[in-house]
Image: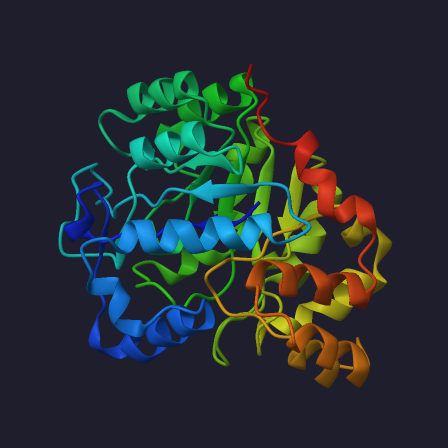
Length: 319
């Protein structure tokens, strides 16, 4: 339930990617982990190359379908766009179209609630079949607790559209408001009745990032509509949250499965933390499909079957 679409401007689908100098090595690593040349991101048909590889990974895995995420632009508090900010953009129309064309994709749209047309865009996406809404508050400058957004969250709750919101550190994309990575900033949508999934369990992505995992688990007891996903937990630093997810039954009951594709994953970190043995690590390491590898590492760690299907009960039902 956490897979990214990526596209470039040359492809003509409305997407764009800005590969800032400091992120060139990271983006190259991600592409190579998918079996794609680093230079492919600049090709005119990159969207098609990326989509084809993603479909291959889904079809060659035990995952039937993925929530494919759109990527909203960055906005000022007054609702004007910050054209100079952000590393990527994927329009809602493109994700909705891909979902109509491929049964493996479920459309997760992305809307900044400060946009002047936010309510209209929400209605349009609901009509188009959106099953989830994704935002990165710390990267897109979204204070989800802003009272101005109450009607937006109320409409999402009424429509049964869940919110997937980034929590914890972030180093793949440009961060504009690091404090918004705190799950405390998800209280208003929760109070409005929105089913909220805290991406990455509030874990640290870098060594100086705050650890929001304890705060998130406290909030579980306050909000029965709060969940968390395990996306990108099979990476070096975030993997510290894996044991806590596995050993606490109350936390385990709120977890849903996500990979954060195309972020690379490995069984090495689970092995180093004593959660799988060397044979399991080597077996998972032989898998070239990153979606299947992430799934198999989590199965080897002992995550229960219901963790991988729980999202089906949270997504908006579309006829």
